[in-house]
Amino acid sequence: MIAYTWLSGAWAAVLWFFTFGVARNLFGLFPRERAGEVTTALFPAYFLVAISLGLLATFALWIVRRDKRDRAALVLQFLALAALAAIPLFIQPSMAAYAPGTPGFARWHGISMALNLFSLIAVPAASLLVLGRSKE
Image (cartoon, rainbow, N blue to C red; front, side, top):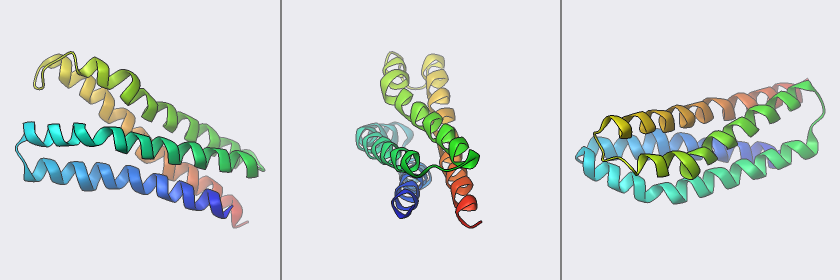
C-alpha cells in the first residue's frame, strides 16, 4: 500500500504541478505564442513522467486490490491513463495540422484540456477511494 500511495501521490503532483504551476506561469510570463512553444517543448517529458507514474500506480493498486472501492479506483486510473495517452498519441498530432489561433486548433486544444482536466480530477479521486478503504 505504501508503494501505491507514493506513486499515486507523485502522479497527481506531476499533473497538478505542470498544469497549474508550469503551464499557467509560462502563459502569465511570456506572450501567448512563446509560452505555447515552451509548453509544447515540455510536453514529451510531462507525458512520459505522468503516464509512467500512472502505469506504476495502477499496477501497484492492481496487486493489492481487495474490494469494490479498489476496483472503482482502478477504473478511474485506467480512464485517466487513457485520457493522458490520447493527448500525445491522437490529439497533439491532430492539433499540429492547424495554426495556433485557428478554430481547428482551438477545438483540438479544448479536447486536450478536457482530457487533462479529467485526469487531474480522476487520479486524486481514485486515491481517495483507496485511502478511505485503508482506514477502515
